[in-house]
Length: 173
Image 1 (cartoon, one colour):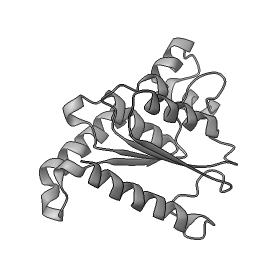
Image 2: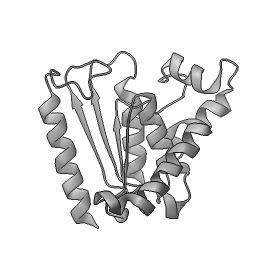
Image 3: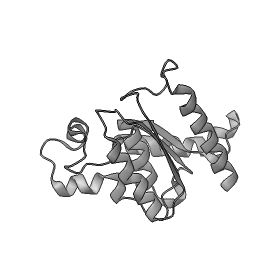
Image 4: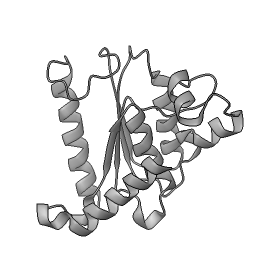
């Protein structure tokens, strides 16, 4: 719960103090990768509706705690080794989506051995079921951990995908 509360506090802070840095309080979103992507998605779904981020960007995000698709170490660390199936399902992002979940962009690599692409696909499909604007880009390679590395083969296309999606979201309002 502490990371969730910290992320929610950061959103509130950016909305109240962000104007000092030219941040539009109506355009505050959240981005995370891997376990941080899980946190960004969790914040987007469980935060009270009037405090949710306007969008989320999830990069090779942990999404699902289901037995079939969960990365064992990540959900094991988050929920403990004695977690129940009910806890895994309750914390799986695709099961938390509601009509109030904000739009999301998902970026991942097809050869990621840490977080399978099927995990993000479940979240994407849940967003689509509720009519929430979403986009997903699956790059053919890169594995896990490529975000922020300019030498990554698809770094420029990933940056362009984010910039294009943010522009679309800005104009959607």
